[in-house]
Amino acid sequence: MDTHKTLFKELPLEHIEPDSNQPRKLEYATPRDKEKLMNSIKQFGLEEPLMVMEIEDGRYLIIDGHRRYDCLKDLGFKSVMCQIYPNLDEGELHLRRYEKQNNRRAWKPQEKSNALHSIKTSLNLKTIKQLAELISMSATVVSNSLQLREQKLEYLQVMEKYELTEAYRLEFVRLRPKLRRVKQYEVHDIIKIIFEKVRHKVIRSSKDFRKIAKIFARAAANEKEIIEFLSDPDTTVAALDIKTIQSGFSLHIEQLIQEISAKRKNGTPFSSKEETQLRELKKLL
Image (cartoon, rainbow, N blue to C red; front, top):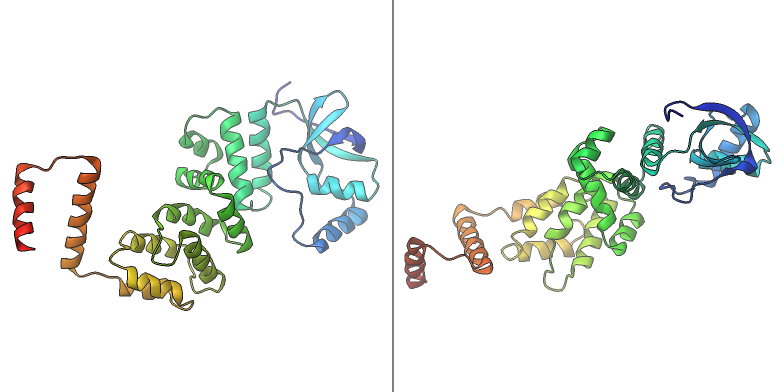
């Protein structure tokens, strides 16, 4: 049967099963939301059929409609109108479910990350570019979203606690590797302080995370200013940025130190000209 062809039919509710691998959790924003959905079904009936896949004769798996199914069960419905797909392979199932649910309401960042990962692995896509083209998203957004799955559980829980938007979470993926301990502030302390500033709107844009990353790249030179930023809950990233702007001379010195350190770390030999210049620099110092 062509996977693009579907059948609309009323099915016994007892023949329908929720999908335990559904990336979106069965939850309502508030208890009132479930009540509103149940009242709507009681008054107008089910205005949109459940989207299900036929597993075998008499068994159907929900692709989309878990909340409606939940309400129908509580209301005592015996049957429900469904849009029935044939038994799809795993990749097609994940892709169709994502497309359907993506058009209805915004995904939570972690749910979206899990959904994209399922599509990529089940379709055996080799690159992020292939996945991005398939779902019409930019490769950068897809890459950052997938990286959310790789964050420590501790950070995922903190992001949930502070209810960070997707934009902040994706910028955090870029920021996290740049953070480092500064005096008494461990990395997890710094993260919580930054998230607190977001919650209290001291940090008003996710783009501020990029400025913080640049400042931490020069943490040794900016240590005093970073500590002031971390210890004062009202200090903004803009104020920190102004305080850490370096003069041309100090910036050149810092860049030189970084280049010398990188060569030593990588075991890259200095050229004869560089050796001569380093000896002259040593004499001056």
